[in-house]
Length: 159
Image (cartoon, rainbow, N blue to C red; front, side):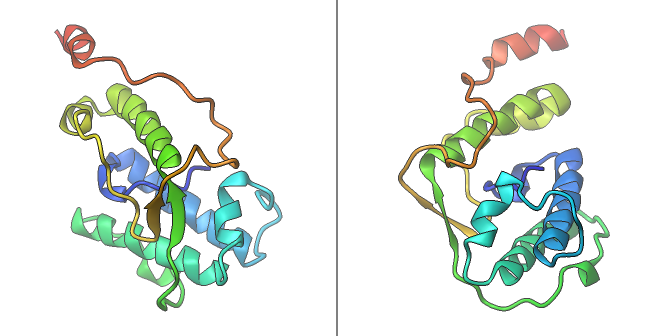
């Protein structure tokens, strides 16, 4: 499960669909509607929110908005009630970590998007989050790796 801190506009089609499904699963966990994933580390920041269910609904609403802007037909009825919620802090280290992780995925899965986003050094957060200085989040279990390979390697592979 990956509930991206990054804005969903950066995701490729596969990533956006996966995010929708995973966020719906997170919503089911937070509503006690499933037995699995109850202790998944990606859910810690939602569980720590004053209104976890409203926070995940807000998260889903932004994913739905991105999908709608692309012409996808995600079911709005699966989101639940929307009310204003306090933003969730996201550290600069976490945002950077996720950005590098996403670029590695895009380089393999969606080379055109990799080329589009590779030079961006300050990606936007998902609207539910606000950036704060700090390291990678303690709940992050993915290993930290180096920057994605440079563009010339991609061009050699495509040639």
